[in-house]
Image 1 (cartoon, rainbow, N blue to C red):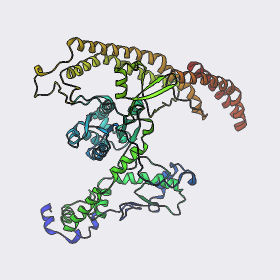
Image 2 (cartoon, rainbow, N blue to C red; image 1 turned 180 degrees about the vertical axis):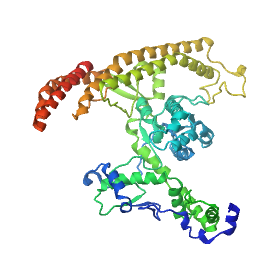
Image 3 (tube, rainbow, N blue to C red; image 1 turned 120 degrees about the vertical axis):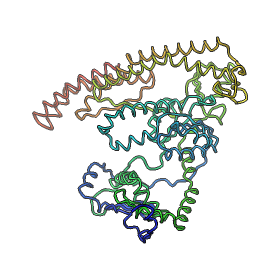
Image 4 (cartoon, one colour; image 1 turned 90 degrees about the vertical axis):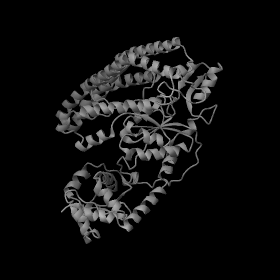
Length: 578
């Protein structure tokens, strides 16, 4: 039976399409749109396996009523905000609405995402920066490899290599989106804050490099927690002996599994609202039930329900709440300029015991009028982020740090050629325009203009000077990368690997403060040297005693081995770090 025949029959099954719905044991979509989860209807064997892997916490310590939400009054200063999004149009579109709402508060908003969305972003009134990558290819890879380990077919087809290349392009694009001028107008841009969806990957590293706040946003809860259940979950597990913390944790995985099923979950949501039929399992679809489903969609009451749903969505204040959340979490109190309070601070200036925060405009004015020396300005970091790399042992630590150092050196070598070429192109564009006069930028790529109409404000000698300076800077970066890798990164990685060896047999190793400069490095070196020497000497005596007390003679032998290893690694790490 073909589709036309099915449409003509219009069987009464469209009224109660029981064949369009396949129940899941213990799972249902409630009338309010939430998911009813009855764990008593799920396989006890499967539930036991999941519950054993779920951490348990003291209920009184984790379940506390959240603070009531109330939009607060904020002293808002205009910021340069970069929004980084990786995904399909469905991932990008909510952040377009977010960006437009942020613009209403005076912020300059740049949305960095895949090149295919450029027109969509620009038509929305936001700035755009391309980060590369193809969302269709990303989705295709996820469909072919739904698990963590890629299939052999993907490996043989070279999909992994292609994805690694794409991810490298995305990471590089996300970083450049924080600091590079507008690719079309040439207008400078340096981010004061990062907003990103979790799959954009580079967000935390960009925020760390610039010392600026990071605000992760997503259209659904991203991280499982025992503190409270998934907002869409109504979970029941009476008589199963599972703690509330475990139930909360499990609810996230169950809801995530249902939402990623695609058509069944969202189809149920639409059907509950009366805006569409119940979903059809792909193995059960035929011309008759598909025709019934289409007929159901064409009904006037269905169309009215869909219109009511659209009206509710239009009147939701989700974007307003998201912007207020960003403002509540942003440290405005320490992000403003001391001279121009309505501008974001970009530099710090210290003279004696006095330390001031200057915006870009304030610093430029002071330098131009010879009030301060530009060499005394340092990048202001309103939200420092420290990421520590966990080392397991000295061997893998040395290998990984050596590879990273080699990659940095290779990049620096490439920059010796790339940076001068880029500097020359940038200088050519700026010298061939009326920037920064009336705010309009005339670029060399403008087809409506001829080269002879450009107003050259710089000579060829000036362009040569920029190229030579850029090349010298790139050469300096190469020498710095060699010195940093040889004398800092690799030795430090080996030291941290030696420190981590006692963890392999269960000993607790205290963390040290982040190393952010030579002062903190000297403090850490001195402390770790004293600690490593003291604990290393003690281990040769303490570990055999503890082992004998717990396991007798066998424990004493184990303790002696631990003590010898601990003595060598702790003293070695202390001496190498110092």
